[in-house]
Image (cartoon, rainbow, N blue to C red; front, side, top):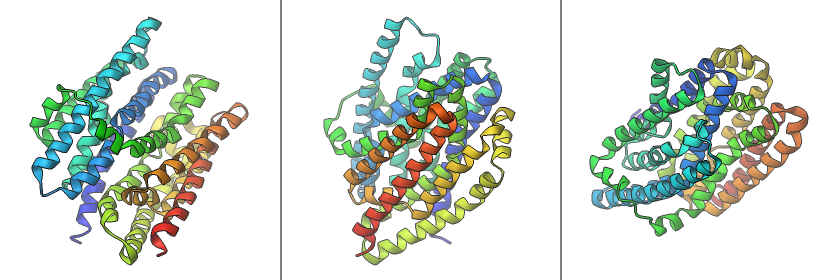
Length: 401
């Protein structure tokens, strides 16, 4: 029971963080028109992608380094300070480029044009969360992920009741900065100065280059469908796809909770003990996922209506397809995280690139005839193929010896 408590704390913390993203999607989808919801989520999805890009893989780098130096508080603090200084420098550069682009267009009327204002708080949450996890605080680390910004924003949106996409984005922006400040207070107020003393750390970027590539590919291999929908479908499709993909969040945070709980153990375990650890992680994740999988596959339309309203009722079959694909991934276990912790970053990078290629090619081929259903089928196929390839590699390199 004592060994199980850290997992419970990690699960609970990440649950609250991930629940914020779902709550924000539900509230915005219900309060705004389908078009305004699409404009808001277009900016939101772009912001999260930018946050991952400017981190340069630093969350996983921090997990590796700080976990090994947990008894050296000065050194671990210095790692976080350098990381935040480097990220802030990149954020300021990206923000200036973003402002310049929309200034040339002379269009600051949509949330997308104001994404720049939230790049720093969104990007800082990853390193802050990883630092707390590596310091042996899985509950706090799970909570202070970027999803907590959405949790705060959900409450603000309920109170403000914005009537359009821009008003909703203003409310969300306030929540982003409040959430980041609260997270900084958790890791230590002394780290605030890092945000206002930007200093690009080339070594941090090079150390995390493969992790950076994996993070970008992982994000694009899910949310690339939004780009396809914007190219080929109406604006309202962005809101629908966001709703379908956000319904995967309970399974995603379950996978990541188990991943980050087992990550330090994967890094220091080998042989038969590694096989036992991997098997336990597979079984644990599968059992915990079953109730949600059952509900969303048996009553998919009812779940969508309950969450987002009647306009989503016709997309039940699409939800069932991607839920079953996620269950297949869970069944094969946390292969990607094991490869990361064994420094097989290039292998995971190639698997991610393969998944994205399958996703985009199938999506473009199918979207014109099957609309949103084509994008969903492409996503499901890419999830299954990537999970299968990664498991084969893990079994041959680390579990069969």
